[in-house]
Image (cartoon, rainbow, N blue to C red; front, side, top):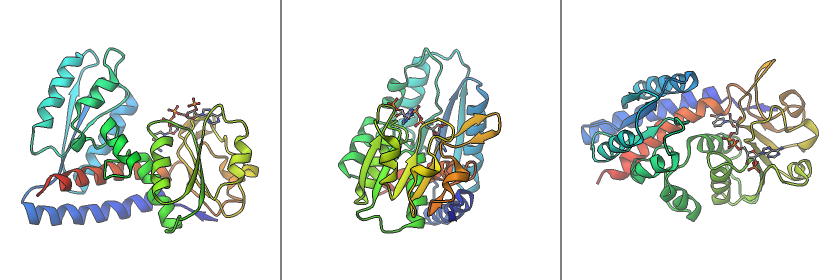
Amino acid sequence: MILIDGKKAAEELREELKKEVSDLKAKYNKVPGLTVILIGDMAPSQIYVRNKEKSAKEVGLKSDVIRYPDSAEEKVILDKIKELNLDDTVSGILVQLPLPKHINKQKVIEAIHPSKDVDGFHPMNVGNLSSGYESSVPCTPLGCYLLIKKVEPNLNGKKAVIVGRSNLNGKPMTQLLLKENCTVTITHSRTKDLKGECLEADIIVAAVGIPELVKGDWVKKDTIVIDVGINKTDKGIVGDVAFDEVSKNAKALTPVPGGVGPMTIACLLKNTIDCFKRTQV
Ligand code: NAP
């Protein structure tokens, strides 16, 4: 079984991006910039944002974090986004989710100009992705896609089963694999025979949030299994895939932690650079 090393893949991607930033700097005399807006002091968000800032600086991006208290008014955030949309030194804007309850997530997502939407959540980018046009792609599914391609560069005709239909993971994952000519089944909490669907799959991507949902006897030999889940349990952090059981059958499997997670931030950096490149003439 191939243990898909997301940490190593993310390191390799960051190295490529570092080189790309240096080339862009030589060509345009400026570097791509990522601005993150963080509202409130939730511990996980603080950690994510610190990691994003550190990684962005490591590859040579200009990186800023704008912090607001939990009580910040929605208008203040929307006005700041408008200002950043017009700022030439900002290539990508990310508003760290989740937001305090009094701030409307959809309004915030739609306020970010699609060309600076490094999360790929703006309806324009969602539409472009589903139409097969160039777009920003949400970072986690993009990371999953790159890991799958490392194991199997030619996905033509493969049967992929996506477990979970969130806007963040399952739906964009579906679009990415469709574009690669996979036959894609997207499953969810009302799917009648999830085990039966998974047993048909050459590729399984599990993004559910239920510890070890995908069992060993749900996976046929030679299946590539990507585990997006991050679940806190008594035995520590586990994924949505029963790792020990599935590793006996699968062709390749991502561990949790150390699989998809590290690729997510690397893909955010990639998206920032891609946003910059699309705006240069
Ligand atoms: P989400 O928005 O809660 O969506 C979960 C999906 O799973 C829904 O579509 C739901 O179906 C489906 N589902 C629930 N129970 C199911 C069941 N018994 N059988 C089949 N499908 C079922 O979750 P998310 O935001 O996509 O996150 C999923 C997991 O990924 C979480 O553990 C999260 O922490 C993790 N995550 C990891 C990363 C990373 O960087 N590695 C990034 C983001 C998220 P319905 O639509 O029918 O409700």
